[in-house]
Image 1 (cartoon, rainbow, N blue to C red):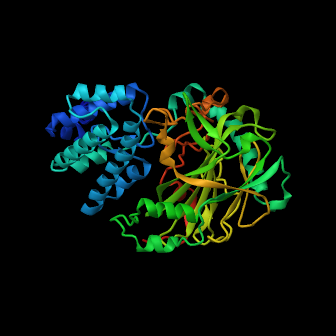
Image 2 (cartoon, helix red, strand yellow):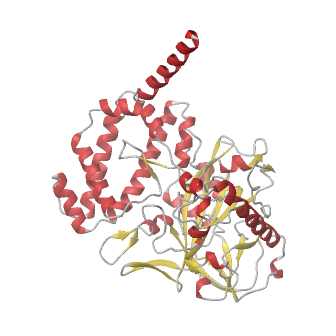
Length: 503
């Protein structure tokens, strides 16, 4: 008995010691002896941005490192830091994410906020955005140069870099998720069957609710050689091509989708966001598709992804379920490309994260995995043949705005051209007051978006389920947990053929 008592005390003591021992990050930050003026600047900037509700949450903060931001791809990439060049490249990506976020946050500051920031930090210069940008770049560089000289810098970052999921365990607990998910599984399965049925039909088998309008990119794509762009680009230590903004724009042009929209009302017209007075409006007289680059992993190889996001004034009409109706609606179409520019995977979601499905390329994908205790991945069809001279066409139904058909067919229809615009413009939309505004709030929810779905699907644990969301904030499953930007999404759902992805 005494031996048993001793063993229990020993285990308890070890657990207590482990629980009380400081983390690498804590030890690092306590001993970093950082430049106080730089820290004061970031502390005041964060405070003013937060109090003004001007945070950009496309990327996640790195606790203790105010000049860095992360995302799910970089949070996964920390498990692949097998060389010093990789560690260096990884930190540079964290800095790039912060620069993109900070640029939109600083541009959103009012003259009064800029003045207060400079006064509280005792910094000189005119109270204009450029002054704040200059100090941001200066202090970001000062902190980085200081920190990277310190021992255990990257180790502290590895411990600090993570991205929480967008699900609430508390909501699922109080909502009795194990019971509530059963009817959700039933109705989700029925919806999936409907989507599968759509994608087996020929294009001419659909009943139109209104006029068919074909939205095509205003920029020609038949002279863009994506293979040449990717294969001639320098690559980093992870094997990722190092692309300029011009390269990304050319890739976006090459895969720009043709959207065949069934148009029964103004709510079916793809539009352009504008800020008028105190709210965001969609101008349906001008069509835009917003694009951005992201990254994923197939097996252990990184792939680039080109995303296209387009928007409507609302979800409405005869086909849309009543509880899904509401202000603003949209779709995102994403291509994942190998190093030669071939699409390995196409996947699509509504901009709430709903109705996500895959369209895999049979040349690269061997089989679909069947998960335990969850719905099977929705794969309504496999990728049809297409090229830049005959881009993919996506038929979208009226009101509900679901993709019903994908092909490289060409159909006679009223044509409208859309502009390709960087997605970051949605996070820094110009206003009439020499500043910009983020269309999304500090929870990644589009301002002005509304649905009653949270009252119905509370138990699924997704806050504000059904609302339109910002990139980096898209939970795509009500049963289980998954995110659109999870870099392991494809590995979890598919088996890939050997040598289908190369460095």
